[in-house]
Length: 616
Image 1 (cartoon, rainbow, N blue to C red):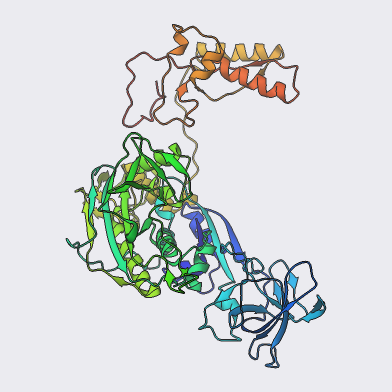
Image 2 (cartoon, rainbow, N blue to C red; image 1 turned 90 degrees about the vertical axis):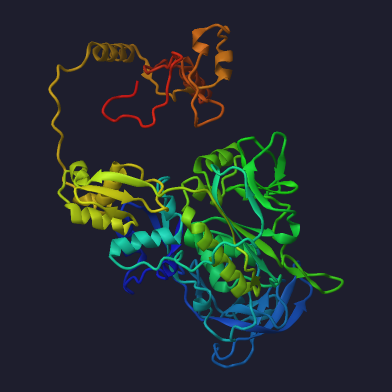
């Protein structure tokens, strides 16, 4: 998760002197993995200004198209005269507002700008592209063409937000809420002891029967669905610079206004959304499991055969999206533009916004089954906030109305499967016993309330977990939250007292004697993964009734090609032998000692593995 510091300050009033490195230190202390702080615009020096193209002269006689332009940069050049610039790009015209770098400036990469003679003319500066300003992928790689309202000669460094710091955070699977500015801002606010402006705390209208029709056939797979409709969008409306820049800094490519807004809200609140072209929908939007033989073409133009376990979004014609993973190409938002013959604008004008909460395991398996990881699936499979769907849909509607000139329909569709808040009972002194530190009840309650929990009780606490923290499931999870917020560095280092015993067991001694004997004879110990597939058993030539063909299958294997636990050590050893021989090591001897797994027929899957002994 890439977090621009300028965006983070919108939700937490950090001291003006705090740098990205300072915030990194606080977040690392709170248990987040901040891998780097990127300095955007380091070394950038102006003048970099907004200019207006006055004339364009096409220069002939060169291998590629070259244009000699005059550009009005106001008084930024000290004379007020038009600036003469040679440029090879073709994606701008007379009257366009562009970004101009003048002599004396320095661009990213220590690229100094000066007047120079080229193609028989003298170029006093450059008309800039996003690549030259190191702005990230904008989908065009051409000259930056600004909207007409920007003033000629104004500072483009501030306009394009070129100077910023971006925190690159490696979000662990249990911290799905941190895949959003909302989540990172919450952790930052706690770390600094400052109030949080939660972007999800906005007024939302009550559900009504006049909203776009919906039908959820699998409430276990989708326990909450919100639909909103916006009509009359200007198909030529473009995303504003501030939105495009925030998306670019967060590592996403601007596409179109409607798509950019859904991506922006996803980054802001953590709730993935999808926008459908209403003119391409037929009938109610539904959520169900795929039927045998169904297929769908996703937004990446790939036709996919659906599995009956896939959760899909449908209309009357069938699947129109892989739920929580990727939408279908048939209902894709159409880009704006004008018809070449009539000059009329075309593109999507009416959209239906879908915000839903899907089962995390179902989405994870669908994404892996289709080898299709998306920004949406990364958030759903880690557990999104079911209570945020209405707020995210409202935020999307507000931005579409503000930036796209649309009108929000009054109807609001909400399909909700009843559920109770998750509560955990925990002794108030449990974090003290886990950490070996005396925190006290007041500290425990305060820390749990800071992360959004409601806490009741005295000696025995009843804790209601916030909807955005599905990872909090047991007293030890709550104890971990208290410990990390109080600081892992404050835990004392104490050596545990080993229990009295009689040394190694006879089996352990035999194990070590065998290893020493083989190593002394020139063998090298190899360690291999304990997973196999049926193909390797066929390669070993095992008969059909061989006991080693009876394997224990994993419910959630790392690889579909190796879904079972090994019943013999030979496949791993032969694989290691083959790899070493293929790399030129022809004189070697390998051995391995390790467990094999033979099914008994009465295996059961425990709800929670014990920690006081090794698994059977």
